Image (tube, rainbow, N blue to C red):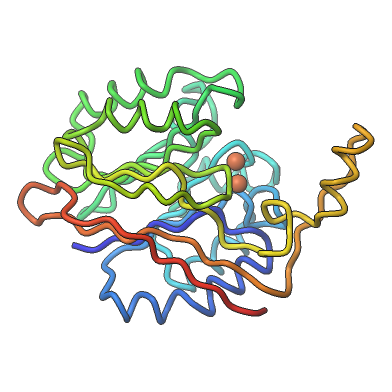
Length: 258
Ligand SMILES: [Fe+2]
Ligand SMILES: [Fe+2]
């Protein structure tokens, strides 16, 4: 089985890049399932029903999220109703709307958020351990998007879950890392998928907006870059049909012009 995991899709430019490139990539590699990070899909901040449908239309099966999941208030209701295949980090308080994992039948997907430089969340280690102990995803490939800032927290989680799930990938930094590997007990790992967003930007945001905040310390509005040179960052994971462990994990990164 082949699964493609795509980094944070940033705003309209990211969605257009996704729609332009994903169908061809799916065909080229005979991909069975696609998981994409959507926390920045709506104007750079959060999700809407429209951006969600656009990503599904492009060929995405499951959309994961992160710290921006609550940015568009209207979407919280859609998350609560479970009407769309969008999940939010599992280790938000249990009372929070939405779900932290989804079982599609042939595969299961879990979303986690880190704590280092990220915020006050339940332990992602304890929460994922509890979910897996309850039998979630048993007997099928399980893929995890660990939305976290530091490479050390992501690496530690990789070793914590080695042999217990098919693969774990990091997201949130929007910068692709060159460390795809299969851990000792067969779990696929990469520190960060990267993003689907503008190359000429600061992690998807107009460089002048970001620079102004760094130079003056004054909070400014962040506008995404929606045109020009775009990067499409993803990782292709192939899992064994019997063991559900990873047999290969490779980067699939593309550039295009929107
Ligand atoms: Fe993001
Ligand atoms: Fe994030």
